[in-house]
Length: 634
Image (cartoon, rainbow, N blue to C red; front, side, top):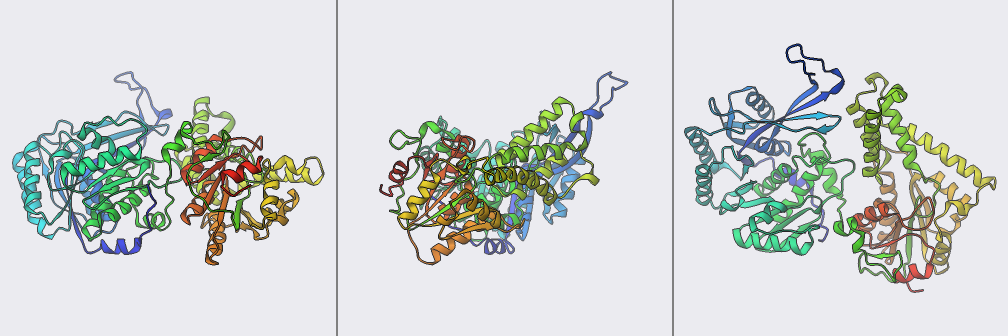
């Protein structure tokens, strides 16, 4: 898989304003019930404990969610065609569609034999319990279905694109209905039709398909072995295109999207997102994004890239189907962080070791001996900030628990710890303010701290940084007084490695997301500041942009603007590796064990490979071996 060029997101979104897109199929609604286990009472009638609902909300699902996504993306005219019941759920769906400006003259009410398809999703302790589904025994009235199709066909002459949505066995898509849709597709060969069908993808001749990899394999009768490699994806894509003679969009989760048309196959990488994810609704976002792009005249592969951005936005919205809000699509699409070598990152058994060492060669990229080397500071050279996770964990647990920390039931306390650990693991490498935004969501979800006692995300960031600064100050003070040696806080071999690069004329740069004054003082105290002839760069205290990312962008762009070649980046975090990869510089991931200060950290290895590292080293203890692995020469 190759990364794809960035697109002009603003131009894409502007292109949606004048088009019309129809959605026909299974219109559903989701009912989210947030349960509160401590508030139930014993029913007088049954003797059973009741379940109390703390919060209830309704969100559009199925074809209704696809239509919503089109509206959110700014599509000028969105039309809905399907059947709903004469019930409170159908009325709520209509209310929401109306608020979005969606034309529902083709969404007809069947008063008998049909209940609006509703997925009731109870959540307890932030885990979804078994769903309660309404509408599984629906039988569409043929006259009403005929009316839906008649209105649909009448509207086709004004449509730029059509999405056919099928996800219910007991929905509108009966065998008779599907045959009529197929006839309509053949009757209007110049209209863009894209089908998203869970059960009948093989039937819709003449239409493009959006299908996930598992469903695609089932259509072909393939037994895909995990993990799925690129060759298997190519085989599935080629055979589906040969079978259907139309473009296929195959979604693959973190692996991205495969797009196959008569011109070529393109494998579009998945996009890295911070924090916990919820994949519900990702497929709806993708198909909406693709259809809007195709309807506005974009090419198939560009449409898939945009759909990829839409999905990356929705999966960050937990406990909801999510929506591809344009501001967030702009943000992700303007500077996407792609995921690389996912199979290798998750399976260290596939590692290609260099001369039986811990050094791992990921790509065959070579740069010759470098002229410039940019080093991340914390975790790559210095371990003064080792243990930041502990400081953050303590801050988060205390912030979620508030004054109740010592009195919480063991089960609830353990649930808090589990969610905090998950948040820290998923957001490692992201800016602190993003982690604090995740903390705020957890505070709201657990509901222990009263609204008046809550801080802002910046307030919680200050609490964390105060705790971390106290930890670091003690270490710095110890070095100053001679209690600790500088070597106690330096990755093994790092200073010797820097000196050797400096001796050979390589210009060294030191970069950090930490305040520049602090970085400079720490590098001076530990004894290597003078080696960085290119400069020492730190961050400004700003919550508006990832400070570390900003620092690396400035350094790398400046070097690049001077026309310099032979640039290598060393770092233990994904930010610096991604920035190097975007510019096709050699990226060396330092999977350091910050406690021992030598040896391998497997969690870092996975993050660094996913970020696009070319080589992984554990430390700098064997300079000759590292130089040889990087093909620098000894």
